Length: 531
Image (cartoon, helix red, strand yellow):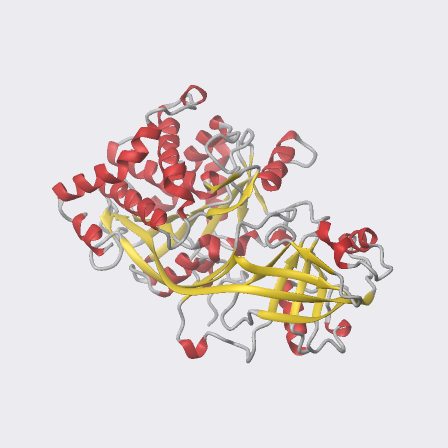
């Protein structure tokens, strides 16, 4: 990898490598099957880059994979061609992010319910049940099962050595996943099994799981385990609860409905043990952020940077859905890495004005594994933190219907919200706050680490009014495409809406980069620096 990176500094060698990298992509992109749907050149060029980044040849760009590195080299080459300067490590476009992976291999893994009479019932891994792999997780476990409702602290007596089954709600006013886990640890449970909430329709549970793999930033070995022994944390599909509750005399469907309505739930023991056999693997891996800079045109402002960011990683290969096992990650988030490239190309071509502040282009790795690339960057910035004026993050965007509304995350936390409203008004776009905060989207994308170090940040989602066709399309996308192979190049896209958003994004970055004063976080925000 270092040889490839070094070669990018040699123009002739870079050209040769570029041809090698692009040859499988060019064969695909020359076909451009959706050009007839796109009616302006800028959007067409953006989509061509999206094709290159999320076509099958890029294999879903899983963090730490060879396919991800191919995609990273492609992005770096495009940044270089657009005239951007390296802003990574050692004069390169790359910042290496060290990680540690723990994975559960399907072969040799099983989950078996064992009844008092010895009868055994298998739960299918990744289809009905899954587990979060962590270091030092035992590969063999067997324990009795007990259901404890929402698993609040008052329901967790006498759980030592057992698997505690919980209704895995995400709803406000009930124990969160972290609180359920803390209560299980305090009660010395062997494991925690969360039943997905089938009534959480604003973001329904997604089954099957692509794989069971945990990737974290590398840490000193003595600090890896926060607790003396790991808590086995599992998830079970709602449709499998009938099987789990067999012999209890309880109505599984009624309990799920009560949980979905935030009603009181019973506590009861389940007459079975769960026997778990795990085939675990571990390895140290690394993956790269791609960082490039466009120096500002104003000598007084060019020392400040506006970060424009999207995540390059996807899921790669995983459990097949409708016969397809490649999770291409087209709208999540290849399309918006492509938009960073398109903006850089447009500035070079003079189609967009040169900004007064500098722009830091960031394609982050490991977002799907827990915001790893952006978290690493803010802890190891290649630009001094005090020079980071703002972050505009591109993720969770779904151009599926006409663009009339944009939901903005952290809208009320920084002055970027008012800038966004001023830019959106002449484009006839309404900026709204997040109407579904229980989904915690603010914390689930790469703007969040910037806010934690007190850098103003904002991100956007295509919004809608309730009970409209737009909402139907939005919900359908989350139900059948989000983190699935169906997020691919053939899915429905409203290219006119995509073009409108691109225009909004260009103008927003221009407004932030050219404003005489830099954005600030409001003192009332939880992200404001404390004196």
